[in-house]
Image (cartoon, rainbow, N blue to C red; front, top):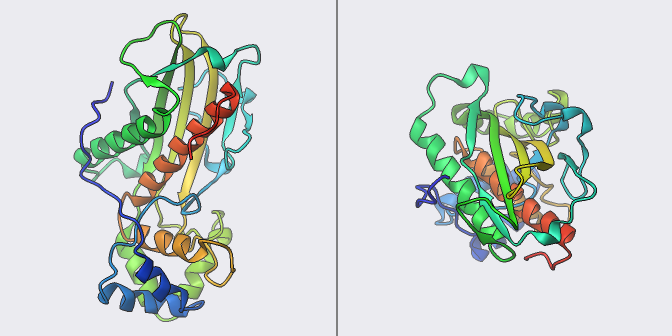
Length: 280
């Protein structure tokens, strides 16, 4: 099991004063105006947000980690994730969870130049996020047994953001407009660009007593540099937009955004299936 060591990567919330400044900016003006906001002392603009990454079912991996990919179907509340679960299983019988060692694989063209310490920090971060979100309803254990739900996880096709291209896209004239429209044109989710990070997950749920597979899921999350329309009027739209924008300037920020989303989704879905109140 991965030791939940302190990760070298941390998140901070968006300062309210910074959000007030960014809300006064509209459309393309935000791309340049955000720089002024940062220089004005509002540099802490990262943090978890459900819209910073988006599910892309066309990129879901099939590595052989799961037993049967053909039976996976779109999951309720899964943002595009595909899942299957054994219909007769009563998940309310599980009150403990074991998170086994998380496996990691890089996309074929990303094998060179990735620091192994970065990967360990990412795995540690995801483990801690899972523990954080599952702990309110489960006891975290180190051994399988009766009443234990075992989680086996493989992170697949990890791709870091190409930070230099993100900076260039923002710096060149009209780069903002070109990037904002590039997602659908390149077969990616709206607000994404070809150089942004992505990460896949394949996950099994097993009975801790029998080791029988009782559920499986797969998903791939893509980073979104332009995560929300700043003038949409939706609550939190500006905050989401800024977080997505800032994540595009860190190599593995989108992976951590995806981990936060998955941990929250897993916890909430298990709570629903077990008949308990999901943690907020």
